[in-house]
Structures are given as C-alpha cells and as structure tokens.
Image 1 (cartoon, rainbow, N blue to C red):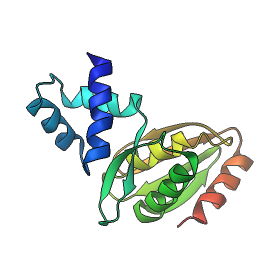
Image 2 (tube, rainbow, N blue to C red):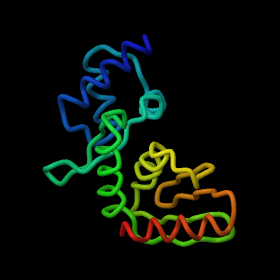
Image 3 (tube, helix red, strand yellow):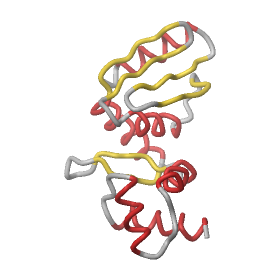
Image 4 (cartoon, rainbow, N blue to C red):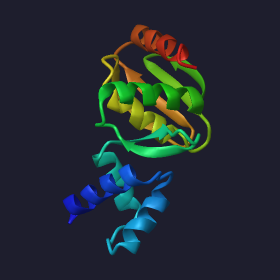
Length: 148
C-alpha cells in the first residue's frame, strides 16, 4: 500500500506541477488512495521531496534524488527566494524565511548532507540548524549569507 502510494506520488509530481500537500492529497483521494494530510507529510519526508522553483515562477515538489547538481541548483534557487535573514547564536544558525517556506528550505538543506550540519528543525518561518561548534556555525552562516 505505502510503496504503491509512494510510486504514484513520484509519478504525479513528475507529470504535474504540485505546489501543496493538499493538492497532492486531493489527487490521491480522487484516484482512490486512502490518505490524510499527516500521511502525505510523512510520504514527502520519506521520499525526500523538496520544493523547487519551476519555469512558471511557482514552487513545486520534485524528487531530491534527481541528481545532485539539480538538487544544489534547486536549493540555491529556493534558498535565495525564500530566505529573509540568517543569524547565528552559539552553535546554532537561525534562518528566517517567508511564511510557510521554512520546511521546504529545511528539507532541501537536509538533502545536501552538509558536513557542518548536525541536525535541523523547521517551523513555519524559522529554521534552527545545529552545528558542532560556535565557530562552525559562524562559518556556515557566512556560507549561507552568500546565497541571498
């Protein structure tokens, strides 16, 4: 059931520009899949889907597995368009995004598997990035600031 749904989700996002979890959920329900918003959220995480800026100027879900150069390019585009500010405190980097964009940016950041990042937490418009030391957090914040 889950693997069939995952396979269909990958097909759907490759065939259509899916901008929201609700849009994906509605398509799956129309096709007879039993799912909830929480299920779709877990599926997006399990499949490592990220939002990327399309040619039409809208964000859409894509598979982060496409290839690493597309992923880095998608991250840079998403990051530069969604992030408002970057700061650091001790061993944390705090990223402020436009409302609703933190989870997409965070998922995209996680998929890069950056060596300075120990872990991340995202809310609606704020991301906390834990680094191993205050010095590494400062370096990472400086690196990210170059993207905006």
